[in-house]
Image (tube, rainbow, N blue to C red; front, top):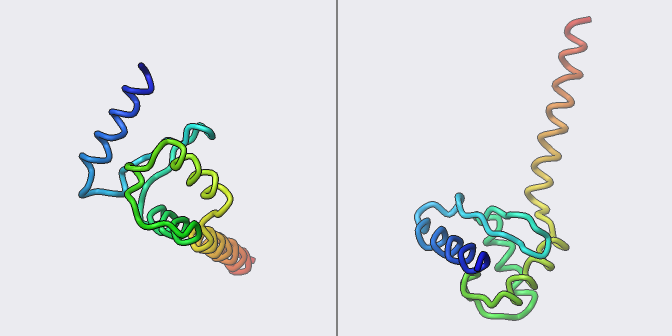
Length: 105
């Protein structure tokens, strides 16, 4: 019964938020975590479909098995661009701290 209620809430949130995709959260049951479905996730999903040689189909229309298959693939393929930008910004902040330290001496 809980699964049905959770599924209905998920479907309702996906249907009701077509205008604001960034607020959609999808639950990855095997790993028991949530993922934000945004433009990055959409790109990753389309890459998954390309690698598996499948035609586009909305994520919410996939069977439970297919969704779990996607999340297994997804955890093995992290966002390179998102991580690279985070690391680049981290490096900038580190360099700024060094410059401030030199200015104070």
